[in-house]
Image 1 (tube, rainbow, N blue to C red):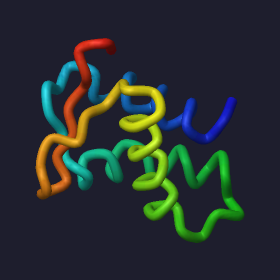
Image 2 (image 1 turned 180 degrees about the vertical axis):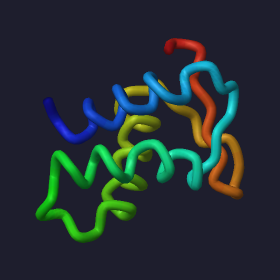
Image 3 (image 1 turned 90 degrees about the vertical axis):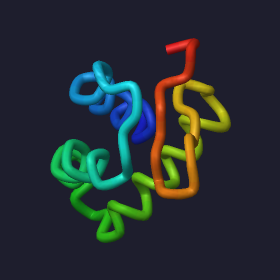
Length: 77
């Protein structure tokens, strides 16, 4: 499982019922599991932000909703 797949799974598990969610909520549910699976990554929040961008641009499962760090699930999710 890639880091992107892991983050997507975590978000679906914890935030699928939310129409919109913000970056602090993503950190709250994802930082622990991502740090557990990738203990050598000392910049986990940076990695989470990068993966959110990839989930948005490459996979189209998330949409960047506004400039305040709000995301929403795309209609293809």
